[in-house]
Amino acid sequence: MQRVNQLLSLLSASLVLFLAGSAFFLSFESLKDLAVQMGVAESIAWLYPAIIDGAIIVFSLSVLRANLNQENILYPWVLVSLFTVLSVVLNIIHAHQDFLAQFLAAIPPIALFLSFELLMSQLKASAIRLQTIHGLSEITRVVQEKQAELDAVIVSQTAELDSIVRERTGYLEKLDGQIKQLESKMSNLKEDIGQKNGKVKESIPDTIVRIGRTRPGRTTKKQDAMQQLLAYLASHPDVSLSEMAIAISRSKSTAGAYVSELEMNGMLKKDTQGWQVVDGYKEKAHLG
Image (tube, rainbow, N blue to C red; front, side, top):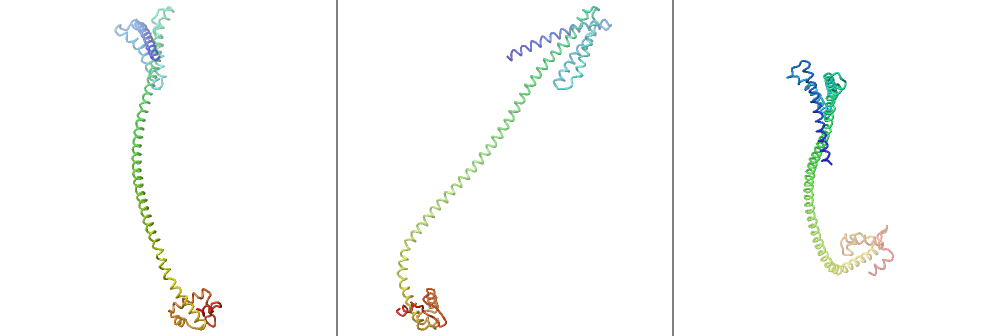
């Protein structure tokens, strides 16, 4: 379909160009002959039609250029119209007084104007189409450049992120290794503590046995001394602490400790008359 459109456009442009050329030639000959009739030398008479009809072509091209560049087209259109009217009038003047001859004389400049304007319209459409294609190509090029820049940025950022990830991964692996070392040390420490606890547990029974072996003797001596102290206080309520110590053959501080313990246990109390052995413990004191 595109190939057919190109062929039609080329054929149409060729025919329009042929029509414009034919109209230009007919109008050119009429204006040249009129210039010779007006006394212009034949050698330079051709300049008049070249100026008049050539101006129509030049001004039409100016209209096309202004239109494509989105400029003001009023002035070139006025010039095209004026020189077209001038060419038509001069061609009519050159013709015979017969109306048909004048009508035929007016056809070439009008045909030149219309055909050339048609050719300009086709050229304008082609130019717009080419400009659109060029614009699309330019947009495509810009998009590809931006895409390439974006790809480069993505690649750069991806490489940077990969580097950061590798760095963080290495740090985490190192941290994981340190954690495993700490876990190993804690495990070894637990084993050492367990072994020490085992040794302590093994040694506790022996200690208990030793304590059990020594404590009864000590307890018996203490009880005997306290019974002796109670018996002594039962018959000597107003004695001093030094006398108590002498009576039980202990130190003063030990005697004081015994008295305090007997008071706490409710076996001994002190009133205005001195130390009194509580009822119920007097008989035990004497028996002891």
